[in-house]
Amino acid sequence: MTCRKSCPSKAVSRRDLLGTALGAAAVVVAGAPAAAVEEIEGHFNHSYKMPQEAVHYIDKGVPGSQICAGCHYYIDPTECLVVEGYVSPYGWCDYYND
Image (cartoon, rainbow, N blue to C red; front, side, top):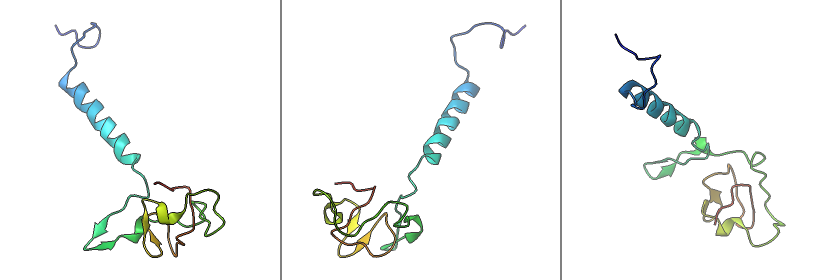
């Protein structure tokens, strides 16, 4: 007689381990940022970019030193990996990352 469900056990079954691992992998994939960038043949895939309104982009009058030209996602002269459209080097958005 097997005591699979009613007996306490410290051993973890292979089925439980695989189920947990697959569940964790699904959470990681679902939590991937929407602004992830994929480069295809030297051109950036623009389908991952977000509208300027969604990231609260402003093109001038930025308080402090956090300007697009100093951001990790900025592509000189007027492009960004995260934000759609024209991006001023003196702009700012919620995804600013130095």
